[in-house]
Figure 1 (cartoon, helix red, strand yellow):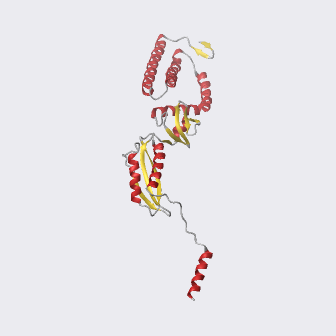
Figure 2 (spheres, rainbow, N blue to C red):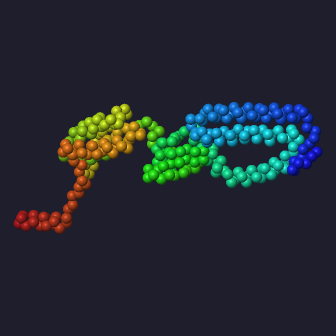
Length: 279
């Protein structure tokens, strides 16, 4: 028996042990190659090339390393001391890197599931903007104010994700109030015409324009319009102004809030005048 750096190496290793080690390592290499090849095919369009290659190398050499450690006893190496020390070190490293591992696993799930992709407009935990990048450990979001926000993938994966452009169409709506003296049917016709004339206002799903309720100061018309998700904000802003100006051209106005105020002194004076006239 030879003691080398704390490991006990036995000299009674046979040829069969060596052949066993060679066969196991060859099988492990084939398995690692198959796994990484299939992963490359599945993720080639979902990850950046450099990130994908880094992940595949970690998986490939990780499989081989596990196989190598598993066959060391066949070569006469007693790893009991190494396993104890490695176990303690593994626990320490595990606690220190648990967030990194969680972000790594979450990143793989995000890339494979693809709930978001680069260019999408999203909202995660109050952070809204454009997805700039989806990395292995984090996701980069550019807010509508131009700020760059880095979010750990674990938080992205475990949070509710609102994707504004995942669906091809998106609906928006207005509530437009007109005076009681105005013609509500004419107002609805004008609004429908403007919607039909707009190139990005979708006909399917069909828009809806109807009187929703009779308010204190106005007849309230609800307008619901569908537009392409990538164009909905511009359509919303443009149509609102067109509806406002076209209604005004046709003598239909949006009323200001109105209140009738009674003054106690004037009411009392009117009552006294009425009594004097009755005498």
